[in-house]
Length: 500
Image 1 (tube, one colour):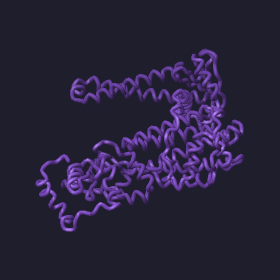
Image 2 (image 1 turned 45 degrees about the vertical axis):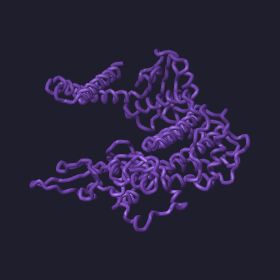
Image 3 (image 1 turned 30 degrees about the horizontal axis):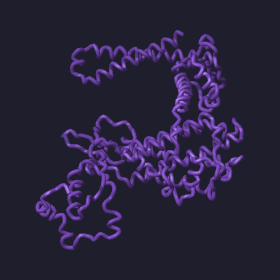
Image 4 (image 1 turned 90 degrees about the horizontal axis):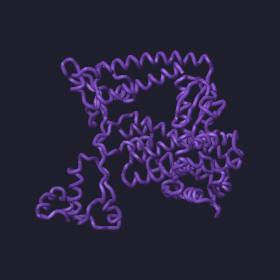
């Protein structure tokens, strides 16, 4: 016990303990021993002394035990206040409807002032959880709060955060429904076929990559939950499901699902992997978004009801079917890494090279404002044989994620045709296009060049003023210098494109 003078404590606790001095302290029943002490107290930093310290003192004084073993201290949630100041100096806060519009990104009028403040009913910046649940759903609210639980002392929170995670909840539902619908299409993935397990010999690059990424997500989310980094855990699950799984892998396997590429055996193998990865990410997200994940889990349970993995089946299939046999998602085991060898750094680096090519093609199409329905030809060249071999072996990925008609590998840099070009580390990429688009691009680049030259002149003028350099914070000056360097780089790129 870390305090000494119990007489002082008797006096100090006299008012707090008076009910128990009259009625007696509750006996240590089974329920009392089950729930006391607790494992963790989650609280804001503002009541560390007013409540947390006193709870510890009172508990140790009365029961000779601490009330909890660990304390997680988070920041305070701040809401945004909006008000108008009248001519006499009085302040009038905007009504709820107007505040909601401003929170969602509407332009704030000049006569309205705003700032982040501690929540107050009089200031109208209270966020009502019941109202948020009605508008966005419980899962969206939970995910938004979990992603905001940083170690910062102040958490700025408005409705855009809830709207973002409402969209994510929709993404979970739509992505899961797409997979479930394709399981039933002929040739359907039956529970008997799934029970046979994966055939790793049929894996393509994207299959190995998604298996490595889901295992890395499992490791990171477990680590973040154990360290009470709820915001990082939420971000890990969000990024994997939205970007890696839906935006990339699902698009890569669509040709196989729609029977436009690969053999029926590879198609079934990919479908099995989709189920395994979906089962993992649903269980990973369950503590943060319990309702929608429980619903998706129940559909998976019903589809594979009664399935028992074959003895020769792989461990991934066995652990997935074992989870589906649980009473509910909340009763299923939380995903754990099965094998260190399945964290494949080389595979992830290879896929990163392929994705960089995909992003470059998309950026060029966006910059050139190429219509979505117009397919283009791509020419690639790399002095590194490994890069050429990697891209050549995985050409099926590029058309699935980009609007490309034909992909050609050139033997030398001189063979690359004229067009919109970019360099990705060791890979040269050129996209050809009709002359009318080339002329349109030159006009756009000239306009962009004029804007950049004007910005460059304005920055140089500011940075040449001695008084400004002496008074301005160092970070502001450095940011302006970095912006100037970026503008100069963009101007050089435009000059190369206009005068190849």
